[in-house]
Image (cartoon, rainbow, N blue to C red; front, side):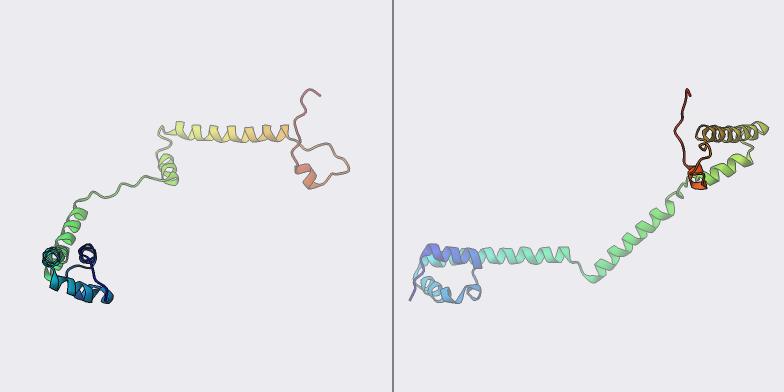
Length: 164
């Protein structure tokens, strides 16, 4: 039969606790024999039992604090919902920023902010854009008619040949 030492019993108690039912079966008989014949082993076992009881009491208390009764949970949830609903009702409405189309419509309704001068500015800007388009078209004109006188060839931009 295998005999356990005090150090091995201490390791067994540290690992599995004082309850012999949790000890591995191959070491249980030897540990119980050591407990029956050694006062030092019984003192270690008593200390391990006190530690197990303290851990069990603390665990039960923590379970009660972490998991309150169903009525307490419902009351806490109702308080949370009431608080959220109160904050939502007190919150100012969200501010929306007008998009490009809304700003343009507002600008046109106000006449550009300066009456007829606003419409004049819009017309002048349009004319400048059209003139710029004509200039770009003139610089990148179609090449002289040749063997490749097709529509696709005519639409190809040509590099500027300045100084010729």
